[in-house]
Length: 132
Figure 1 (cartoon, rainbow, N blue to C red):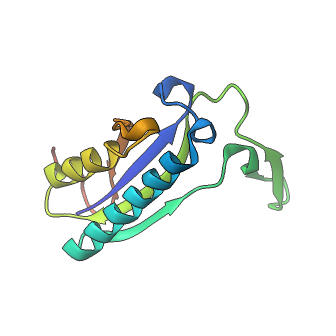
Figure 2 (figure 1 turned 180 degrees about the vertical axis):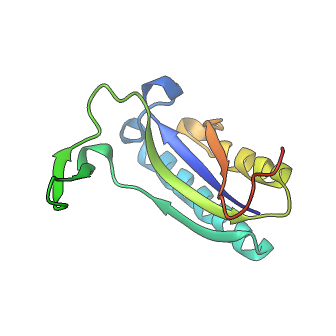
C-alpha cells in the first residue's frame, strides 16, 4: 500500500520558523531527513520525497473561460498551515506508515530537541482504502 506523508508548517504547528534556527541546528535537521530517506530506501519502502519552495513562491492556477491558465499569487496570508514537503512510501500496513511518520515527526529542531511535527498520513488511492 502506498501512503503519502505530508509535512505541514505554520503558526498553528507551534514550531519556530526554520529561518530563526542556528545554522548548526538547520544542518542537523537536514542531515536527519537525509538519513531517514536512506533508511526508507534501504528498507525498500521509499517511493519519492520532496521538499517544497516557500508559500510566497506558490501560484494558484485555474482554467480560464477559454481553457488557458489564469495565474494568481497564493496561498494567501490568512493561510494558517502550508505544505513544506512530502514522502510517498510503499508499506505493508497502515501501522507501518504511522510508525514511519512518527520517525519523521521526531526530526531535531533548535538545540537538537525533537520537533514532534504533525505529519499527515494519507493512503494513495490506487485501490479501495484500507482500515487503520
